Image (cartoon, rainbow, N blue to C red; front, side, top):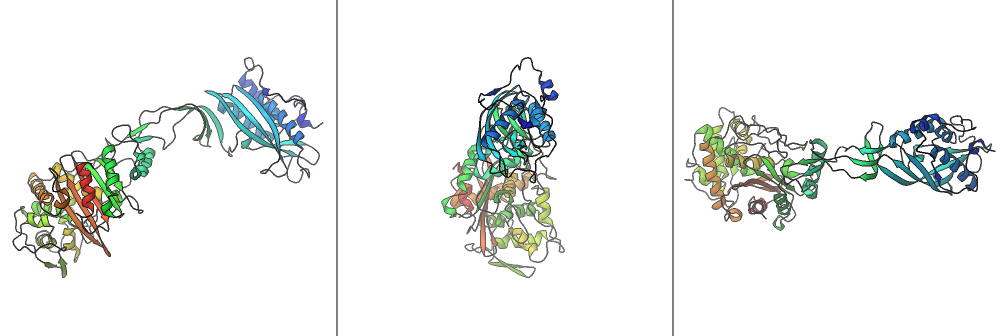
Amino acid sequence: MNRAVKIGLAGSCTALLVVGGIGTYNLVHGLTSGSAGDRPPRAEGTLDAETLSDSPPSNAEAVKLTRAFLDSWARRHLDGAASDTDQPDTAAQALRGYASGLHLKKLTFGHVSSTGPSEVTHGATKVDFEVTARVAGGTWTYPSALAVLKGADGTLAVHWNNSVLYPGLGEGQSLTAGKLPVGAGTAKVVARDGRTKLSSFPSLREIATTIGQNAHATGGSSSRGVGVVDGDGTVVERLKVFAKGRAPVVRTTIDAGMQAVAEKAVKDAHLQGKPAGTVALDWRNGHILAIAHTGEDGNIAINGIKSPGSTMKIVTAAALFDRAGLTAASPAPCTDSVVANSQVFHNDPGVRVNPSASLAQAFAVSCNTSFIKAGFHYLVHDGDASALHDEAVNVFGMGSWSIGGGVATTDPSIPADVEGGDQAAQFIGQGRVTATPLFMASVAATVRNGGFEQPVILPGQHQATAPRPISPRTAGYLQSMMRGVATSGTAAPRLGGLVGVGAKTGTAEEGDHTNGWLTAYDSRVSVAALVEGGSSGVDSAGYVVRQLLSGG
């Protein structure tokens, strides 16, 4: 008789294999004693390709050995079960790990049947069976299978690999039962209402994933069940859940209602499918209330680094007030063109020449020549054109921000060392000046708040500060001027009927097209929007901003 089946069940036995005497059989003893009757241990690797029979085992032979193997396994005769395999030492260790990892209390097998030649193991016969394991936390039933090989001398052996324990279990993996620790990325990232998942909004799915992997989550509880453990002890797959836990929660600053409006606004029909991005802030504290975008080149709301056009005139005007002592009533003639550093600059179409314009009037109609002439005259000295950069850093907090949760944002840039025509172009948001909707929403927020509050998406996240607050004088002038833009200036066609709104439009040239910008605030929020390919700020970004300020 083949030594591998000496203590197997009789060939006619088809009963379910059941562990007996669990109450009196010590689990630790069962894991370590390894009694195998009179069966000698099989040498590791005694069956290989050169010693296999020309034909696989018959179905009856394969089933008979499988039942013997499973019977020994069920009775905790683990060394005996391992000796029925072609890798006894490896199998014995794995069977012990199975019992200890699952805190095994009882093991039964049933539905043992052969399905013929194995499609995976050459020269083997496949045998299916069902496993029922009583483990820590509950009872787990699953289908499994193994392959039986036959040597040239008629010796039979179960071909050992980790999938004998559980189908698909890889090398270096094991099973565990009990508490299943919460893995990375499983945190529930929600809006500030504590309920709405950020992942339910298309624009925030990637952000939600990033925050879930990086931010500190609170609350939650472990589930209980069976899982696959990797070599480093990490649960990589949950196979059976007996008691479902609660995911820990990361609460963000996002306002679910405003986010829903923003998602709709960036798809406004007037934009004709052009890429758009928008950000809304609570100007009182810098909390990000909404981030929405369309397009295929990433999140342009926080990473769309573009020339901001005339929205930069907010910062230019602030520098003229702070550094040159100008007022909103200071003369700022609006001419058809102006030359600075041998470069000719023109106004956008539709801007009327007004030789007697004040700075406030030039701001309202977005006259480029007024701001280039004033900026170049008052803010560039002996070739030093760093005044606009300094104003942006010192008053408007321009720098490298972390909004929290590992979410990447692109920093704005107003270089301090600009030369040539860029020394004038910067004052109208062109040349080497770049910004994102996130930054421009913050610029408007600084004006309305009377001071810089760095945007954050996590409450309690560290917020950078500006070296000095905006002066009440400068903030007052800017608020009055931005109010004029909304009521009777370039933003009036979209925002004129809204209460308490201040705004600034912008149109920036980029290659063979223009981009439309608009930033604004009301009594609650500040908003900025960018539409790539927008013909003008008011006729593209204006539609996005209006929806956010009017609640959709």
